[in-house]
Image 1 (tube, rainbow, N blue to C red):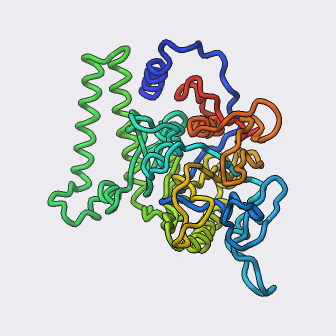
Image 2: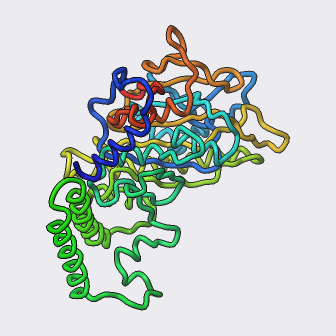
Image 3: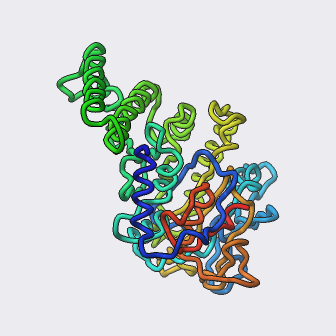
Length: 415
């Protein structure tokens, strides 16, 4: 048993002790994405500006604009054309090109209006403790053999007990300094190339000696082999990472995937969305987000996939969200305050093209069918953040039972 299998088995065993047997599992995506991008919009976006419009609702202050109907999903164009020569918003450009690959999730009950608590719940499903986030769970389960299974360029993240699967670039680019000491101006000692060879030879010789003397079989052998494997992954990160600009741009994401360094990437979207005053700023800020997403999807679509064939977009899934949404009505300062309902755009490989859930008058979350996403019919249930997070695991082809046990996952995200 290797390190990945041991950790996964141990964590799952501890989590499910005393619970029902692992028989009633929800179906997972049979054709999941091979890579995932998570983009965070810090502060709490006003979802009515794009993904959850409420025109004509008496209890919702809806910004001017027009509905864009793409069949299975509808979005709001906050700045429609006045003249035929006016440019389209990036919202329209993005959905014109990629709406057929998108699902919009509405009505996730976050049960809080605290930034920190809501951020943890939308990304981990839970609040408090040592719960890992969605990207960590996916990367640990499906990409543990990569140099950095989950790469955080910037933005929030919770590794929980799986820190070995997670790496941060660092606010001042510490990762680039570790990869290439020439980028670390204040380091007093930099090993030469022969020094590095000698250091690695020493580590490998020591590990092999330990393997012979005390780790020839069983647990010890596997742990020593894990150490040797980590040296190979470190070499790969060092050698390939020197050619990457870890600046958190679209090109950074493409390069990380091109070199197959990571399975999941977290990046912070442009703008600050805590608009207690001047909520009108949400329009241009969100448009800049979709400008970045449009550029990312175009770049992935143009990039051949060296691992899976085709182009990279065919194997990549994006999750775009903020920690919360804004109140239905404007306040006295023409802003909107915190609202405990989540809205998420999921787009790309393996995603079912549908609206999942809904909010009604007053932007109150409506119960839904977790399998179909419909808010009418049978088997309706209030969607918790745990159900959404478990559903993202199911979308990624990960058995959500290992992390959420008896929580039913939102399987409407995939067919």
